[in-house]
Structures are given as C-alpha cells and as structure tokens.
Image 1 (cartoon, one colour):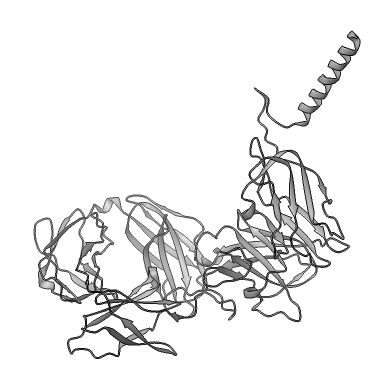
Image 2: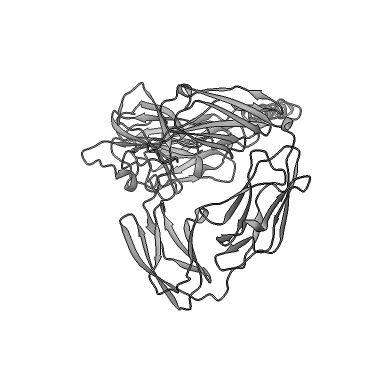
Length: 536
C-alpha cells in the first residue's frame, strides 16, 4: 500500500513537471521570455491544396492574443465577405477562422496576420505570419516586391495597400474604381512591400491609401500611386511607386449665407478661374470681393448688403456656367476685427502683417506710423494680399531695434465701411550674431524653372524662390535650427506643384529632398551642396 502511494505520488510529480515544461513563462526570478509564439499545427494544414473547408483552426505553443486584427490581417485575394476570426479580446492557444465567402477556383489564398499575433504574457510578436492554401491542385509561388514614397511629402503614409489587377480581355482602367484586386499586400510599418503566392501573368500595380479599406479607389478621400507599365510575372525586378492625392474635377455646391453681406460658395476641385457675378439689380455704389477659403474648400463672396429677399448669381468656371439663387435671411453683420499675426520677435527676414476678418477696401497710409528706438519715423510700403484680408508693412529692419507700429483711427476701412480704432503693436529685432547664413549650391539641375523651398524641422516653409536660371543661393538671417531643402520641378511653368492623374496617366511633378538635414547654429555661415541627381 505504501509502495502504491509512492508510485502515485511519483506519477503526479512527473505529470506536473511535464505540464510546467510544456508551458512557456517566467517563474519567479527566471529569465524574461523573449521568444515569439510558434504555430505547432493547423487544421487544414498550411499550404493545403484542393481546399474546400469552411473552418480553419491554428494551434500555437502558448497562449496568444490578437491585437488590431481588423487592421493587421490582409487576405489576398480579398474576399467579398470577411471571415470571422475568434477569439478576439481573450487569450487562447488557437485561432479559429470561419470562411463566409465562396472561394475562387484554382486560386491560392494568403492570410497575412501582420503583427497581430502576440503571446499573452510578454507581448512578443509573431511577425508577418501567413497561412496559405489553394482551391486548386497546386500552390502559386511567384512574388514581387518594391517600395513606396509620397510624391510630395518627406514621409510616406502608413498602412498603404499594394494591389495587383490581372490583365484579361475584359480589363479596363476603371477596374480600380469598381472591383477588388486580384492580389493585395500591405506596407504596414515601412515603405517596403512584398506580394507572395502569385501566379504567372501580366498585372497592373497600384498603391492605395485606402480610407475605407474597401480595396477600391475613391478619389475624394484616397491617395493613389501606380506603376506606369504593366508588370509581367515572374520577374526579378523591384518596383517603386509614388503616392499622390488626385485633384478632383471642379464641382460647385449649393451656396449658403453666412451672415448679412457674406455668402459661401462651396466647391470640390480646383477653383482657379472661378467667376461669380451678381445678376440681380444692384445700386451704383455696390462693392464686392472674393476670398478663397482653402481650409474649407469654399469661396467667400463679400458684398455691401442689398434690401432683397434673395440674390441671383452667375457662376462660371472654364466651360461650366450656372445660375444660382441665394435666399437672404440673416439680419446680423460682422464687425471689423484686426489681429497682429507677426511674432513679437521680428526676424530680419520677416514682414510685419495684420489680418482682418472682413476684406479691406481702403488703406489710409498717412494714418499708419512705424517708429524706431529713437521715435524716428521709418519709411515703409504697404501690400494688400489677393484675399484683401491681410495687410503687410514692408520696411528695412535694423538689428537690435524695438519698433512701434501704430494704426490711427481710419487707417483701414473694410468693405462695409467699418474703420479701425487706434491700434498699437511693438516688434523687436535681435543682433545679427544670433542668426546664421546658408550658402546653398545645387548640382545636376535637370531643368528650369523649379521652385526652391527651405523648411524648418517642423516642415514649415521658411523661404521660397521661383528659379529660372541660377544654382547658387545665399540665405541670410536664418534662426538657428535644422533645415530641409526641397526642390520642385515646375514642368508646366505655373509656379506651383501639380499632382497626377491615374486615368490620364499624368505623373505628379517631381519633388526632391536633400537627404541630409542642414544644421545651422548662431553666427555660422555654412556652404552645403545638394546633388539633385542622387535625390529621390
């Protein structure tokens, strides 16, 4: 009896030992677990052929949990009805996949879990785990890889999908607007991508920053990039795609009254060239002004109020001509406000400016004064921007000065006849020793004209020049900072960057960044070069 009891104890001890060895973990005082989970079996097996199952179970060597599965999991080819993945939110030693879609014949499917699988204890990630099967009698094994970048910005967007569309007899470019791709992969954490388990053939390759995750191109909200030629598999080539946001076709929305004397004409697309004319009868002293409100995609039509219940407008934009009626209901009119939009520390490169909420109609320069440290008047010129809501005062700025800027009553008059009260501002300049100079030389310039831009480390514009012939630039009175150089080749010579079009096969204008950031310190004069041939 004693022998049997000892035997039972021994057996229990062995079972407990086996159980503890089978579990990965960290006993008190032990080393931290740094190993990712391991898949030990799958039912049906990984890389099964003639696959007809509706349920899949993947078993792991320890408890795992799924993180961001809806974002991380990429199924190629995409399924119309997404499968059910369980359990989500709880730890488990397995993953269940319930297929809700009808599989295509003779097709290899890849379930790429990205970085969604991690162990329950330490969060170690099983990176880019794939489960593959085929509804046919073999597994496709071809692959293609490459990189993405943004056509304008320094950094590319994350979570960009790379999509292949097979070229068949029924293929048209409009397929990207209506149908899901033949294959898809995702560049989740880097600019690199790889599509695997592909079959031989000819394909269109695009990249999509897909806002709705529906694998179709919606120009209103998605960014797109495309490889200009069809690719043929198999291939040893790698490919690069630049993402851009297309410019929408111009579309005028219903106008609306904001306040008395102020109407919004909302639009989509590029408003350049838009004309808005009041058809309704108007008095002889009628005044109006158009202001483009870029942040909200609308044109502000400011006008001296008319005693009417509604106004009829003719709006024209290239070949578009439309007449629109705006009902007038507001009794309240904006009053004039003026704000200083210049820092109290005025850089020697900066221009002092004020902004108003209503377009400026008249400037009385005799009521504006700039005084230096010795209270002596400073000569200046005024410049009213195209919006007529920003007034700049340009004057020669000396170092180590404190300037007083005064706007006496009636210095500015807005469209409605409102005038300012006395306004006083001060601005101080500092010693030239706190600034630095960049003597920049560009090499291997491809063509003229181009736009040279200097950005600070926050990627905000510091300096801009439209260049038609030179290659050397002396940029003085720059604050100590880290700077980025950007060059935009202005192919169509309209003095701005232009995006691309997929259907018209227009590439965005080339934008190049200097690879190395320029570090500038106080009282430095440096001579960096930018070899455009080596830039991307």
